[in-house]
Image (cartoon, rainbow, N blue to C red; front, side, top):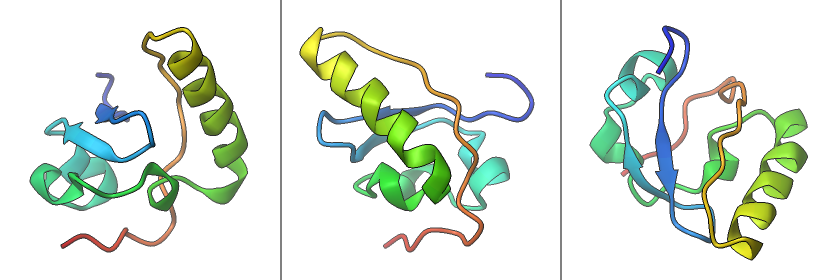
Length: 79
């Protein structure tokens, strides 16, 4: 990942399955605490439609995708 990016692996319904170590620096949350959090809670509202379209395409093609989104202004609620 680049200096200003973190990698999140998502389950098909948009829930974080695994988070890279840079999540702590970028999102302010320990990577393990992101597991189970919906991606919609992690990105800014105006980036969501682009994110959803990329996810739909990946699911339909049974593949993977990469999308750049800015993190939400407030840190997500993580258990």
